[in-house]
Structure formats: structure tokens, C-alpha cells
Length: 168
Ligand SMILES: [Zn+2]
Ligand SMILES: [Zn+2]
Image (tube, rainbow, N blue to C red; front, side):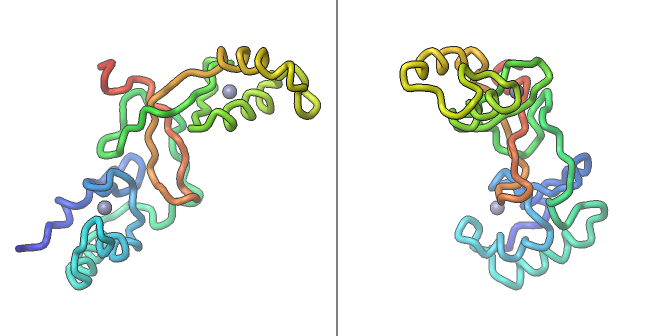
């Protein structure tokens, strides 16, 4: 069987200066393509993978390292090619606060630290205040859809998708 072509494997997103794996639905560093394609997800032989990485290296204008890139914190419509996740939590304290995360603890911390909303700003609130505090905080968050460009720690963060596919 002929190996897949580079275009079949990767989508170019010049607007964000990244390439996205069509199958894995996240951005991949051009220099990590051989490693990526040899992974059990793809099982592409080394020589083919090296050729594909070489082809990508001839594409102009794509960043080699995700560090230092500035990505949007929110988009209106999903970025093409990236997986769409629906288990995000976003902050609703301010309309322009695009903070999105996945864990209730992270958003509680954000609400407390960034917006100074906590019954007891100094240290942990007493046990008896926790239910009221959590109820107040629950009004400051909502379930949202998000995407991520890179999955590795350094270029990974949550991009809030304001118009998820279902609402279009
Ligand atoms: Zn992949
Ligand atoms: Zn916020």
C-alpha cells in the first residue's frame, strides 16, 4: 500500500502558522513529524516518515517551536482540523474574560485570585462556608466548548469556541 501523502496527513493553518495532523486533530511541530508518524497511531515506516517531514520542512512560514507563539484565547467558530471538546469551564465574571479550563478547582482558583471573589480572601474558608461559596462560584462559570492547538505542555492551552458546531 502506498504511504499517505503529506497533504493527506497534514493540514496547513497559515493563519496560526501551524500544521495540524488530520487524524490526530492537533498541531504538530514540523521537526517532530518522524516521531509522530512512527507512533502506533500511524505506524508509518521511518523512511516514509522522513520523506514526509522533509516535505513539510519545505512549507514556508510555519513555526518550529510552539513556545512564544501567540494564539487566540477565543474564537467564534472552531478552528478547522482541531478536535472540539465540550468539557470546558469558562469564567463568566467579566464578559471579556476568556479564561477556560477543565477542572472545577482551577476555575475556583481563577475566580478567587483574578476577580477577588471568595467569602474569605485570606486563606481557606471555614468548612461551613464552603457550600455557599461554591454556590456563588457556580454562578460565575459555565460549560463551554474549547479547542487546543498543541497537546504538549508548553504550547497547550484552551481556546474558547464561542459558537460551537451545534449552535451554527
Ligand atoms: Zn497524528
Ligand atoms: Zn475570569
